[in-house]
Each structure stands twice: as C-alpha cells, then as structure tokens.
Amino acid sequence: MDKKTLLNLIVIVAMLALLVTAAMPLFGYNYPALRIIFSVAAGVMFVVRLLQRTDSDDVRLRRLYRMNLIAALMYCLSAACLWIEDITAQQSWVPLLLAGAVLQVYATLMIDRLEKKEK
Image (tube, rainbow, N blue to C red; front, side):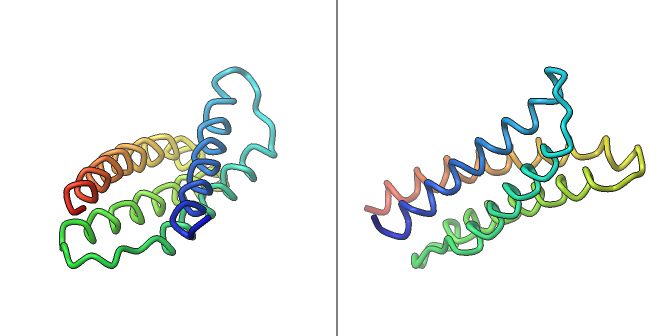
C-alpha cells in the first residue's frame, strides 16, 4: 500500500468519525467523549492534510491542496469551539464545520478532476 492510499484511508476514517460525532447530539446522545473523538479526528485530518502534497507544477492543483488544508484547519477551530465554556462559542462550531465541509468537497472534486486530466 503506497503513501497516498494510506493517507486517503485515514482521511475516510477521520471524516466518518467527524460525521458520527457531529450527528450524535442531534439524536439525543450528548456524551463528553464525543468532544474528545471529534477533536482527535479533526487533529488527524489536519496532520494528514499537512502530509498530502502534490509534486505537480500546476498552480491550481497546489492551491486546491491548500484549500483542503484550510478545511482541516476549520475542523480544528470547530473542535476548539466545543471546548470553550462561552455559549456563543459553543454554538459557532456548526458553521465552522459546514464551511470546512463545503470547502473540502469542492477542493476534493476539483483535485480528482485535474489529476485525471493531467494523466
């Protein structure tokens, strides 16, 4: 298994953990461990996005990889908002999570499209 495949598998697992831990409070399960799992998954996403690089000379492709990194940073900021005791900050984790998700979906789709075109 090469490095790119391994990193993509780690991203999938981290994204599933983010999805499950973000959705659990909607169904009435509000455990303190969910914040820990969410924070760890956001941190893993950030580290993996730091390790994912492209060796392409295409400026647009490199920018899209940076957009994925910014999306992971938004996940980390969202996790930080969960730990702040202020009620306003605790409610701001959802918009940060959604903004990161939108950014990541766009960047991931465009990366796939550009890498297929480059081959």
